[in-house]
Amino acid sequence: MTNASSTTNVIEVCDLKKTIVSSTSRVDILKGLSFNVPRGQFVAIMGASGSGKSTLLGLLAGLDTVTSGTITLDGVEISRLKEDDLARLRGRKIGFVFQAYQLVPTLTAEENVLLPAELVGANGQPRSRAKELLERVGLSNRSHHYPVQLSGGEQQRVALARAFITKPPILMADEPTGNLDSANGQQVLQLLMDLNKLDATTLVLVTHDRKLAEHADRIITLTDGLIISDEMAA
Ligand SMILES: Nc1ncnc2c1ncn2[C@@H]1O[C@H](COP(=O)(O)OP(=O)(O)OP(=O)(O)O)[C@@H](O)[C@H]1O
Ligand SMILES: [Mg+2]
Image (cartoon, rainbow, N blue to C red; front, side, top):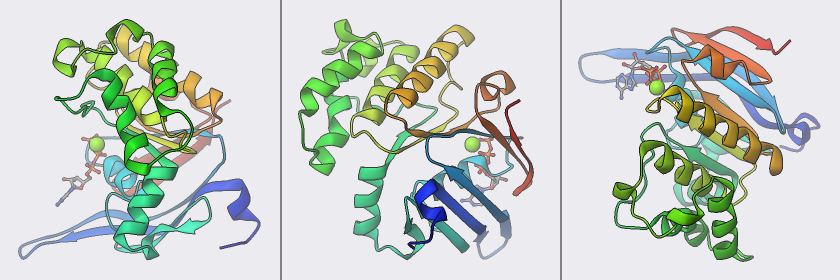
């Protein structure tokens, strides 16, 4: 795709559907979503439990395959990519933060942060960037600790540093504060927004929490697999 819109929109979603069929049932999870996200925007995805938020994020991140419709990331239509091209694109373009941190338990904080850079063979100096990111999230003095030695808030801050190590143009986060108390949740959100500004990353944040969503430039709300509202911040 080389049309003008793909240069300003880092994410383009067109009539996206996801249906899961088993021998006994058929679930229409996403029923035709269309939206674009311009570069640098912070968009929050809200909606009740089961409305399709995580499914949407998994599709946007290329972790799952669409039933129909298209997703274009930075001008590349991902549904047409073969698995290894998709993996490469994911490694270069997308950082992901999960609700349950998902650090590798046998690696230290610093090794966890370095991991994506090693996987994509990032050039530059990933080790010094890892140190810098750990400092930015306030964990310089924990860099040689293992996940089990860290609190939930600390683990999530390591996960944030890890997500930014490759300077991805798009950062996706699924309930990144869902397991944290409100003070730690606020801190993680603030860091996410700071890191986001620093590298002019596009941020897609799934959250139940309207107070967190109100920090976004835009809130898209899903109900039952459809967008029921798409509003810009006042
Ligand atoms: N593999 C699957 N097979 C069948 N149904 C599924 C599958 N994955 C998800 N669903 C259904 O799709 C719907 C949307 O799930 P999804 O995880 O996207 O919701 P969500 O909005 O992220 O909810 P939550 O806020 O609870 O995390 C749910 O009704 C869920 O039960
Ligand atoms: Mg979910």
